[in-house]
Image: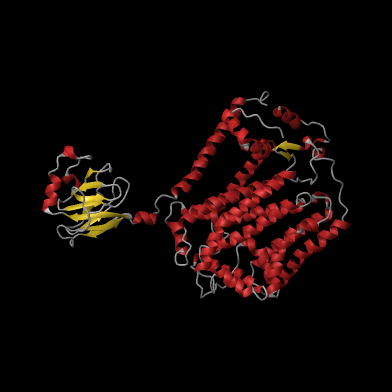
Length: 176
Length: 418
């Protein structure tokens, strides 16, 4: 069909240029259709919360919801802090010092989401199982966390995450 | 219709077992199409493009929309303000409905002018009218979903049409509402059906295309294809022509979306629905206006409803009202004249549907309504008998090449086919 076509090079250029513009146009159309599934502006606006911690007595813990998931806030006892800080780093799967996980040693703020497959570990209430290391125990697949929320035993790969938070005053923290 | 030879071994392997590639080759590539189609024959593929656009944007909107009277309006506002590009997707969907109707109305008038409804394409035409009906139902229910003032009162008025049915009308309306007024049950069922019906439309569109490919497209001359010299393969000739038309269509569509997104809408629908207050002047969306004018023209409740549905019903039997053996309006001097009068009449009905039902508008609506039915029920059957049509060309290629001779493009095509 192309045996008598003149200026084949020019024609190729037109075809390549057209297809390139087509690809750019298609990408520009697809982008909004994909991006609409990302968090909307009102969802993002809810991404930080303030928590009053003055009511948490020593040895007590509360659970608050942040971005749809639980955050554990525990006012640790001196014994719990001692247990957490005396651990040999070689015994840890995801080595991290206890002081690297807290702003103030008595207040532990962690995401209450098991790093294995996302269940909520037990151990917040006095009546609940706390696992072999006296911290938290995930009933889904048997992960044990210590008093610093670090993984000690079971299938979870990493420690319970510490969410970004700051002390706005002695009694109020802002998470997120 | 020889089986194509595929070079790619994977394609060949699959096609031997599941002949989808042969099917696409027959129907989209070699599919012999009259060589003389004008740009009016682009509207079919444009309607398909509009349908796909509506389904894609509609599924996305459904991800963010809440079909509940307490949340519907706010969820639409959230789509407009908070959802990433939600404004764009909603404006595409909102204006897409109007553009879908523009395309389909041109498509229908194209069929009316060139006699595309005549044998052997009667079922093709009837399926098309069925698609129009489904589109109207879908568009109506979609307009209710934002739960603005026009949504609510439009739903109230249109569902009340059914109360005109003698004896059982009131029970039917209560059944449609799921209560004693348009309320939450109405909204949630309309949402479910609005999601369902486009897929019914896809089903009927597939039948429409199967019927089309049985005898192929009609053409501006309205005469049958007499041989290979009258046709060209669909690809690349009509794929490129359709693509060019699609680009022009998308340019106009995008201009509306980005610069005049609310031009075809009604500001009252940005007021949340209030069952205690009807807006002063309620009108349906523009694409329903001609039918709305017919409804109001008749000074009787049942009569108005019957005439309105009759305006569409008459299209179903059109192939048997127009008995003239000549399809194309080009060779029917009287028919051609009346076609343009009908078009003007429909535009006038559309204009009158948007005006208040008072004064001169009422009388004009009645005249225009009467003419609409006279055109189909009196003029067309009469013309079939009395009209003296102009002589038809011998074949499609005759006016182009002066006979069955092989022209330059045809020769080139012959080479390409080898």
